[in-house]
Image (cartoon, rainbow, N blue to C red; front, side, top):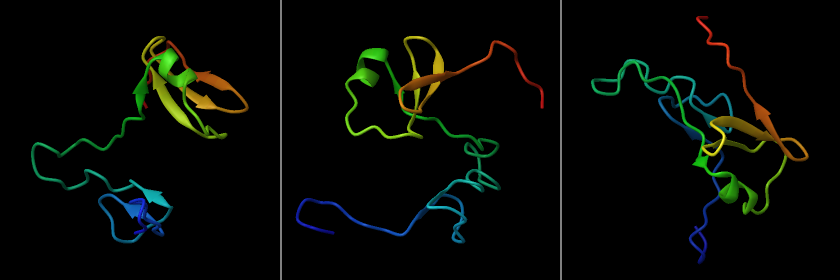
Length: 90
């Protein structure tokens, strides 16, 4: 850790000690005791359009949930909405 409180690490694993990616959630929540069992999902940051437009240093691949439009958005040379109104069962 440096004097600015920043740390450099090789990866982060939640629910695993054998990382398969730089940030690995693939077993998060699996076999967890109550009340965390069956919660194998994650949330992106939830922000408004105004907050999203004030983000700095955004690069392609950044992801947010835009609460102003209830839409998952990914940055690809600009913000792109990833959305459908069709519910999925599988």
